[in-house]
Image (cartoon, rainbow over all chains, first blue to last red; front, side, top):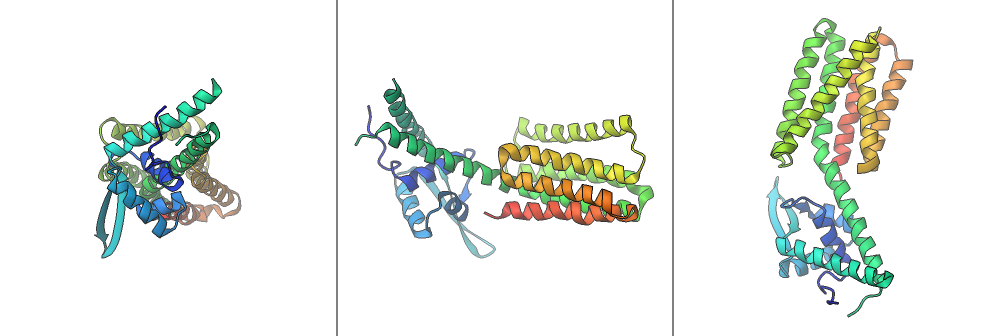
Length: 99
Length: 183
């Protein structure tokens, strides 16, 4: 059996990936909404997003709306594939233990 | 690194919880402008009917067309209606309008208040049903619309019922739309 992806195999990052995967392809989510879903502090969430962005799993877009900064993000194609592989890995472990 | 099946199950459960919450908030956010739009249409429609009863048919015909067109436009601007999905929204609106009109034709309500209350009761009930799958906020909104519609029907002076529906029915939908915009 393969090893789990260490970038996703962390509770906060797993939640981030799951929350982003739930959105339609190309749909961005705002940082504040993601923070509410993941229930992490701003600094903690920011650090994990940077890790995922550096890995190429997450695309981050920053802009201004009515002079206020806005940070939005979405899963990259690579991130979607990595997340699917990670879930397959988890399901495989459960299936093996049941057989 | 190896995981036990319990750890794997726990991780799957956490992922599923985050997915569900994300989908729910996404749906709220997407439907928010539509609630505000139709709440505004209710305010204008019921208020206008109360002020100019003889023009109510023309007013509602125009408002429904405007509502469907604006709803279509809002969805398109936000990228949620491309291809066949766009036609589903228009088809859904047509089905609801057909259902309400057909029921009026068969049941033939006797009082103006019955004409006013019926679409609101249908709308509130549909919202509650949607909420069973899509989130508690829809259930609360639908229950509020139904409760306020019935409260007005039974306890408000019939001459004031249209204005009650404009203020309370339309107002509650606008408030719900604003609530849906919050995180």
